[in-house]
Length: 164
Image 1: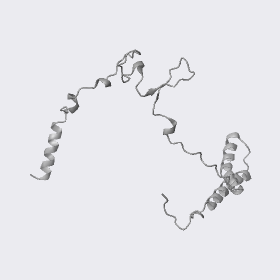
Image 2 (image 1 turned 90 degrees about the vertical axis):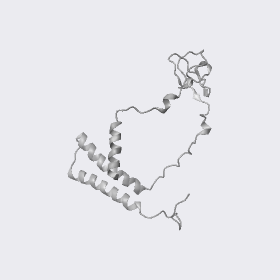
Image 3 (image 1 turned 180 degrees about the horizontal axis):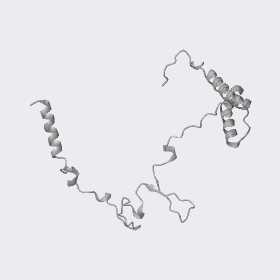
Image 4 (image 1 turned 120 degrees about the horizontal axis):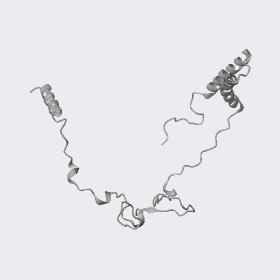
């Protein structure tokens, strides 16, 4: 037989068994009783869907006692303490920046913002106002790009490799 005929035979077997039901290996295993969920939950029943603890609570659940009355209080798991989670340190304050950077950002966003507001609110848009707004946008963009720099930071040292 050639490899092509073997492949054809495999495809014929797949097509022939397409509508057949698959054998379920887990059909012979019984369903565990602890997995059964009952429709009725009885607070006095100790063998219900909550894991066998009386009062409808799972063995690892704790209920917080606070001043809410009439509201249902959600149980919290016993191992869910604040000391078990990573709490990141507060972030450092944002750098203040110098006056030229602040003015560049103001020009970058202020020029288009003025043109948008002037168009929406029918403010006067003389030729020199439009020129000033577009020039402010372009100047702010150019200043920010030129000051951005393309080299490594000055304090990086002689080795600019990865730090683990």
